[in-house]
Image 1 (cartoon, rainbow, N blue to C red):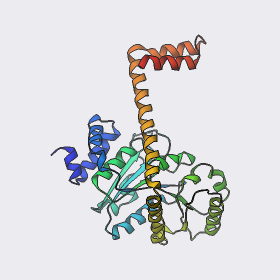
Image 2: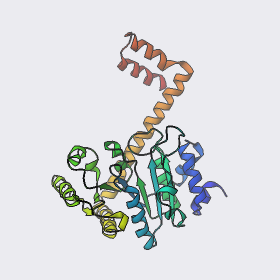
Image 3: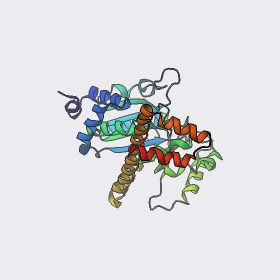
Image 4: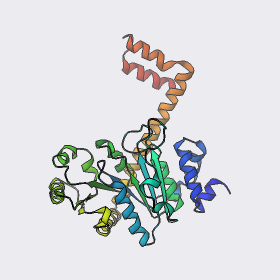
Length: 309
């Protein structure tokens, strides 16, 4: 049985193998995804983001356990910073969610960012497709949690859950111009701490400026004690229902597909330029001319594009 057939049969090892192949830019994996792409689009993809220390992993763990009680299957992609020493992800899935790792209805994969900005791994989109084909009901993508560069999650998820914690205070104002705008649902975790209500109120005040007909709900939770998890899950499901009922799910996915196509095209163009440059030293030569002011960078870029046509 080949890898594609094993994936369709629901074999976990095939999922793991394919994700590794996507991470390593294996052309066979791309061909499999091309062939099976029509089988994607069934899972509800949920992005979980927020500042470091907000408790994203604990929250993911509790939400997934709640879904498992309903009999739903779940895929989890946990994106970690890549270790500068080993090249692997710094945190492992077994450390994050040890109980879930033995659940047959859950597939967990840690992925290193490998230097990619935006809070995600470059292979995240491929991994989401593989899990969708595999047949899970829900896919969680947990981002690195590094601040305003987290906006990439909104290009990959149907629902983006923004996790905040009490005590950020004025920091909410500081970061609202970036990641705060991408939240479809907000969770104020560690709500037993002082300042939780104030944090929730500040988020609500910020949402007063929201122009969309979907007002993101703000749910206070204490993930470690499993408090507020059911309510938060209801909000996430309500957002998906809203997207479906208003036709915005298709529009959101269409917009995300457009961005993915542009990203892939850009990457192919860069690869073409670098391949040609290796053979002809074209870019190096142009760089010398630009640095010595014999040519401007705009003309150099136009020259490269003419050469790869």
